[in-house]
Image (cartoon, rainbow, N blue to C red; front, top):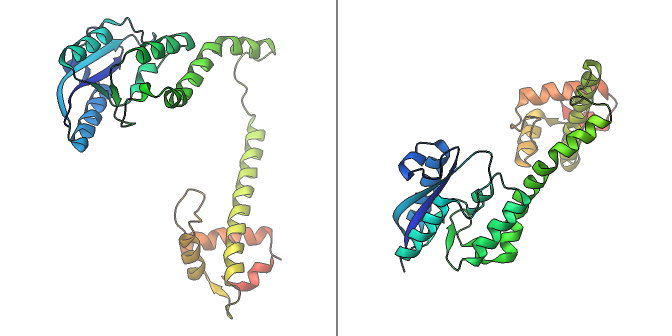
Amino acid sequence: MVFRLIGLIFVRGYPHSVLPAEAKLHPSGLFQAKEIERWAIEKGETILGWVAIGEDKSRPLKPSNPGFQFALTLAGANKSPLVMDNVLRLYDGATIASAQALTEFLQSKKFPMISAAHNRSVHFDAPLFKLLLADRLCQAAEKQERDALRDEIRSKGYGASPRLKPEVRDEHKNRLVKTERRRIGLNVAEVVQSLKDQQKPLGLDVLVSELNHRNMRTQTGKEWTIANLRKALKKIRSEAPDGAMWQHIKM
């Protein structure tokens, strides 16, 4: 069965009466519209029309939002489910109280509001919806307590966020470098251990091929080459020249 759906776009920094055409001129609004259209095409559904909700950047969305009420009324009159790119977008900027009120409102409506990202009307499944909301609620809790936490930090004598002194930062950087070299050394040692039964010392080309095959990457996540592996091994060898694996590697 093919449903006739109404696409719902939610943009912040716009008045409640924002028009869909205006909402689509915002990058977020255009992204939402494209995601909804993509989902509808994949599912063989038809978008009957569009509605948009606007809200101030600093305020959470409330069920009483006129644009939201109009969207629900239009959908009900046409017996057409609403579809959003991600229904959890309605909770952006929410407080704990507003999130609870919006959740109760959505779940009280026996009307499908499809979330394309989840491919279902998630608010009908209370346990799943609670799980999906956990991330938004955690953000809301942090935002709600931010001022109190800032005062707590100031009460300990910190007027601003502490910063590492240059010498401490350099020490931390050097420690990270040594940790990374140790990781590379352990990766190479693992490869050498698995191939040490070969009679002759292992060439760098063999090590490069095996490291990349095992998805053991460089510090920046790139694949190994003979050049960057040789450079890394020279530094490791300068710090640990007596390692047992060197007798199995042809530099």
